[in-house]
Length: 211
Image (cartoon, rainbow, N blue to C red; front, side):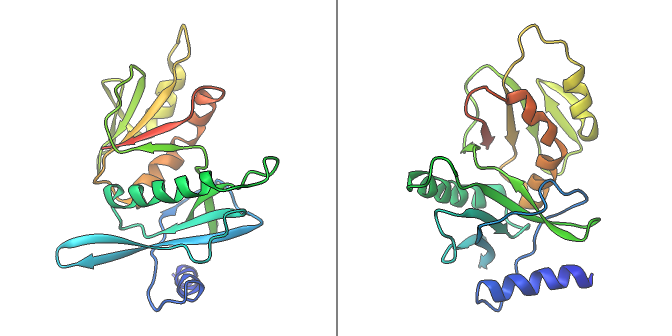
């Protein structure tokens, strides 16, 4: 617990704010060390019965890698539109083509006791249902069953199921997420299926649908 308290204090002083950001947690590290990085903070706010996302990007330099420190309590329907705006702004900026700045989500590895990072630079988010005929994996909020092309599969068996399929032509896999899912659950789901990235290599621009 002391370790995670130190993480929160670090975030408080980094953004010059007397409030905390509760980072998502996982039990595995995808990326451990990043150089040439600047932070983006997205805070959890409430106004009456409404939940709001407050963005602090004052310390983010467009030519560096960005670490998105996002409060795990925020639902995707609120936080993803803010992430999309920041992505568009950064993509529109000028950068060295040989050194393309990357975007990462930060989270706490509860086993390794370190801050870890999940890359998402190339992901294009859409706040709608997909219209194209693709291989769909849909994660519902708080559900341990995942809808994989109209078939319900236990979450921890999704990878084995997909890898066991004998495709004549390898399809592009689209990830779908419940818009009411928390950012905590989203990060855990993304880490769970991280190995699916190889399936979409050299295909069209990766897209994720939130609805």
